[in-house]
Image 1 (tube, rainbow, N blue to C red):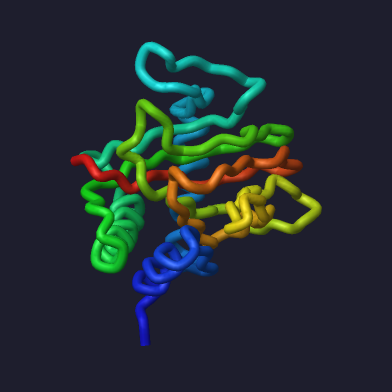
Image 2: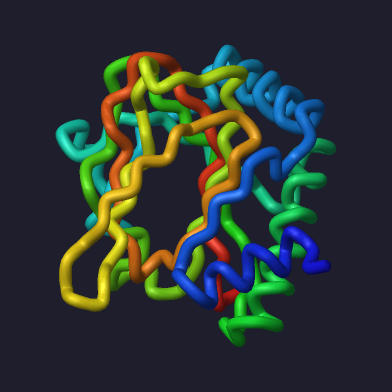
Length: 203
């Protein structure tokens, strides 16, 4: 029987995305959520920007979430546990899909009530090294009434797109090819917390 990491790799190979419920234990999820809350109270989060380098700027009409980047050299105990899970995904993807993934970068992402991120793609000219997007949701509970779904636009063979809305349910992992799947975060009616990151082909 395939491991969950092999299942992710096989689904990425076959359809460019994978969704896994209860990917992390509830203890790890709640511990990371508390850590996020403590860091927020300490004033560590900043409004997310768009673009890279000299073109980086805050545009709240495009996105108005808040982020806190993680330092791979200074991970907390629980962040390190999650990082190791991502490393297992990285190795499985390299075995199955030959992507040459070398490293991971990630941040806590907080969407306050009413916030959103319009349609975009994670791989653009300045970040061609981002090959695979990985999101883990940390929310305690979520229902369709809370909205804030991840909307994925899945390319079809006939040139059309299929829309898939993913509820940001706690413990749910979403993995997809960064350069292939446009997506957006729909306006949320409840505070929405995740760790969002990218597997990269650079160190």
